[in-house]
Length: 251
Image (cartoon, rainbow, N blue to C red):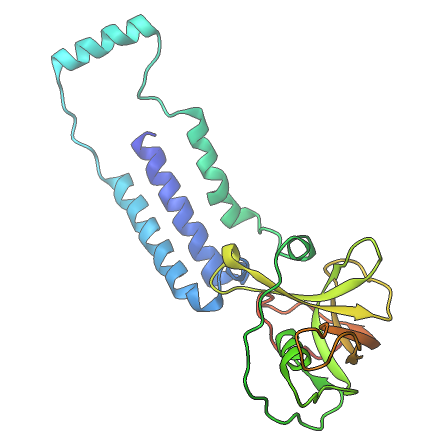
């Protein structure tokens, strides 16, 4: 790839990173919020490298013998090896996408094909507040259902928030969250099965209120992380959709 093209590609990629990290929330579709400073630093470095390459001229090195040999080879083969390969121009597509086209957010399609996030073992649980419905994350609800020997969630109305993932041919569905440990490449899924309501459209964000669906032995690994629905309300997707935060306020 010729030097001007290299400079343009570096500058374009750096500009795209800076645009994404400084002026939009799109970077949250790639990495956790804590990595934003690194994205900004990377964008600055790439932009500076591109500018440096653009204003720096590689010194010409005249080698009559080499030049003559090259001319002969060029005449023999009928083409110039210094030309930019056509496939190299494809490198501009991801760089331009940072500026012109936001990638779709990970959602039900990804969740349906990924492994569920393993819930960490928790040895002790604090008493639950008397709030009703009780707001919980999908992870906390799963822990309470499968590990809390006091069975504190039994008959308790809880409110969970996530997006819809179809469960399969039986028409059921899951309330879902995709969680980034670092970035999109290591994303994991936590899901709670929902009973008593027809499946809304995939990727719809909902606040769901209900009680634990009795299947398995509550407080053990045999218990299913599942909910019998009492109320379903649409909510706006959160700015940072790749965390398992407490429920949003229904609109």
